[in-house]
Amino acid sequence: MIEVSVVIPTYNRKKLLQRVLKFLFEQNYPKDRYEIVVVDDGSNDGTDKMIESLSSPCRLVYFYQNRRGPHIARNSGIRNAQGEVIIFVDSDIFTPPNFIEEHMKFHRKFDDVVVSGPTVRTDKLTDVFSDIERRKRHELLFNHSGPSLITSNLSVRRKYLLKVGGFDEEFEGYGWHDWELGLRLKKLGLKVKRNVEAIVYHYQEKRKLSDLSSLCEKWRQRGINAVLYYKKHPSLKVKLNIRIHTLLLSRFIWWIDKDFGKKVLSSAKKNKSKFLLNLLINWKLSYVYAQGLREGMKKHKVRLLPWMQV
Image (tube, rainbow, N blue to C red):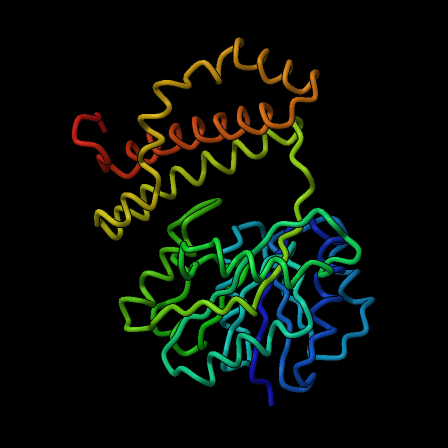
């Protein structure tokens, strides 16, 4: 009997997804009680053939859809899942062997709950979990942000996902559809619990200046979606969560988007100043995010700050 469905949306991450699946194959949870549901959001890198070549110890199912976005892929995963509990991870998330068991501990202990665990960054592809105990201690001691609603590491009973209608498909592109779903689940009466033992590692290569263009597009989309999130749930808490302070910050860092800003970025890279380069990249992303907020206000006819024109 399938108790748990691990739902993974993916797009053109064949090699990385293969590693992600390897870690899920090695879970200490009974192999006949969990399945992995991979929903391919329009990949053209041979992901389908890679999946076919695998010998999985648990049930592994694969679905393909034309490119529509990860939240819509997750909805497909929810519809086709057999498990009572759905665990969401992304196709760049590495899971230690006790990952599923730690999520299920909380679902056995609490009836109406959304379970999240820490997501920590790594750029290692081997010996991935060698520092896991240190990472857990750090999360316990220094991370006081509380439970997260990010779908890189989140689980909830399937019946509740179906009851609220899954992810809102009005969102487009990147960002905030997971938080919006989480808020609807909370309004349904579910409590959000954080289990530090359900830790996962988010694989990311070290940021390079050449990645900035694609990162900027994601942050622009995130800004637009942030406004839609607020429009659907207009409260002060949501307004603060979507980082409206970047609208004010952008007035002081406007130069980051001009020729001068590009020269400063290039200089930091040339001089191998990692601290300055990361600071400038963060400013650039904040500036682009603020641009996305402004686009979102026009698109969705929402005013985030009283003196700003829509």
